[in-house]
Length: 163
Image (cartoon, rainbow, N blue to C red):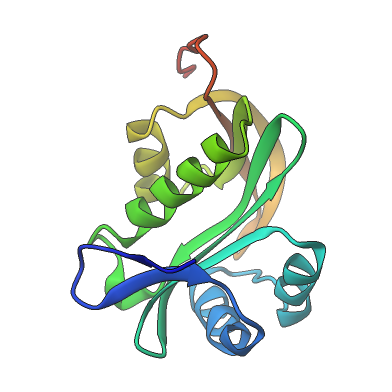
């Protein structure tokens, strides 16, 4: 399924095997301990919701979400550096939320680095709330870094953000 988005000539589509070199490149440029190409290939093989935002053949952003019976887990969402702070991350997140609602999941979970303030802000603005912290979850240039555990409840019950 191809979904045309408001940004000029960008469109959202399922990730293809041919996208993986660009996806891995974006991952390497973004994270100090990036996923290897084989991890992205496994996500495709497992049938996870793997999507890219592309302009022509250029992958601008990607997202991966695992959907279980009544919950989803956003495993990865990343925007190419030159397209950050332009709404691409929000478009990807909104699309994942739409997919999760269509799958009738109750909750969407994710982990995010405590230092990734733009991502934390994006998720909070989409009503994700903190439910915990994973100590030393992510490798970093200075050793290990904590992750915030966030959830968005899609059912009627609301959660409150914790500090």
